[in-house]
Image (tube, rainbow, N blue to C red):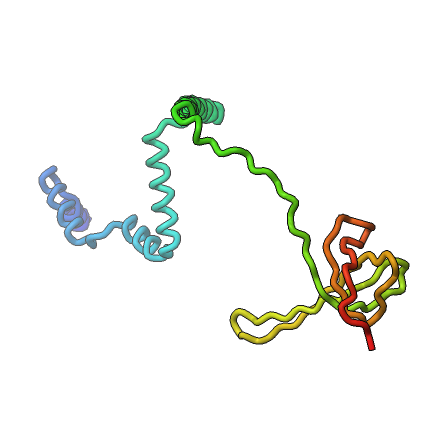
Amino acid sequence: MADEEQNENVEETTATPSGPAEAEAAAEAVEAEAPAGTEDDKTAAPAAASESPKEQRRQARAAKVAAAAGSRPSRTPEERQAERDVARKARAAARRVRRGKEREKAKATRAAAPGEATPPREHGEGRQKVRQGVVISDKADKTITVRIDTARQHRRYHKIVRSSTTLHAHDERNDAHVGDTVVVRESRPLSRLKRWRLVEVVERAR
């Protein structure tokens, strides 16, 4: 029994360091045997690797915004509106000053050259349009329907493009009939549709 107790005491003395110097040496040996990275680093590395580039960019933008917000004091909407009102009033005052100077300058130029003002132009009689066409209807009393044929060359394709338009003309004596070639002149509005008058019958229908 005495031998067994002595062996146990020997094992305890060899297993546990007796002094602080031996404890520090044992701790350094444990750190040397342990791997370089800690458990936190091991868990953080796969998490960072698993993040997509899009998520990394989003986090970078959020950090940038947070840094800018931290450097600039936050303002309430009322304060921002007040700043905008002040800037608007300053711009309005500058506009008033500039426009006043422009008015003074224009007034000075007008006073310097009073004779150069152009007189108002008088509106003349105007020139009435004249068209020649073929009568396509004379059913209405004192009214004929005239077809005006036009032909023009296309600007790009140089093809002759033909078109026609119809107009209503006043025939006081019911002189023109279907198929006649007539000349009509523009006039004042005579009815809801009539804006032309018959001038002459150029050629009778055969």
